[in-house]
Image (cartoon, rainbow, N blue to C red; front, side, top):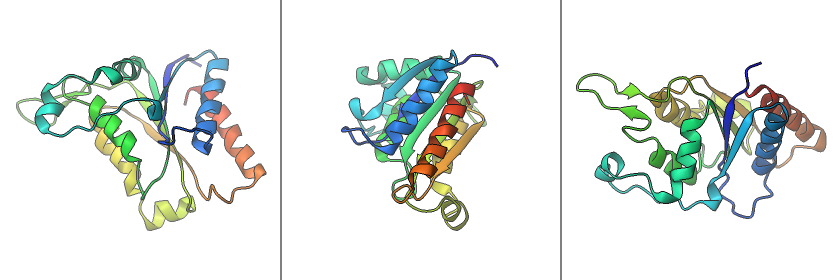
Length: 195
C-alpha cells in the first residue's frame, strides 16, 4: 500500500465539537496516522471563512490570509476527506464558502480561450463522509442524492479530483451502540488504507 498525504476537513459548523462528525473524522485521521500516512486536519469551525461577494473577487483577489494554511494543505494532499452533516439536503454553508474560496481560477482550474477549463487538481482523490437524519436509501433514491453531487461533480470533479467517493451514515439520532461501532470500524479501515 502506497502511503499518502491526506487532509481531513472537519466541516461540521458547530464550534463546540463533540458531534458524531468530529468523532468520525478523528477516528479516520488516527487510523491513517497509525498506518504511516501523513495527515493534516482542518477544522472549518475554527477558521475565519469570508463569503465571496463578486466574480471579480473570485477571479482576481488572493485567497484570504486566514485560509492560506488550509489552501496549502489541500494543494499538498494526495487524498482529501470531507466530514460533514447533511443540512437541507446538501453541504453546510460553511463548507461551500470554504470551497468557493479555495477552488479558484489559477489554483484549482485554469480558464482556456475555448472549451472547458483545465483541471489543475488532477491526480488527487477525495471521500465525502456524511451524516444524516434520514435513511441513506431514501436520500439516494427519493432525493437522488443531488446535494452531494454539488460537491463531488460540480466542485471537486470540475477541478479534476477523481475519484470522489461517498460514505453515508443515516438515521444518526436513533443509531444504537452496535451500529455506531460498525461505523467507527469502517472509519478505521478507510483511514488505514488512505481511502
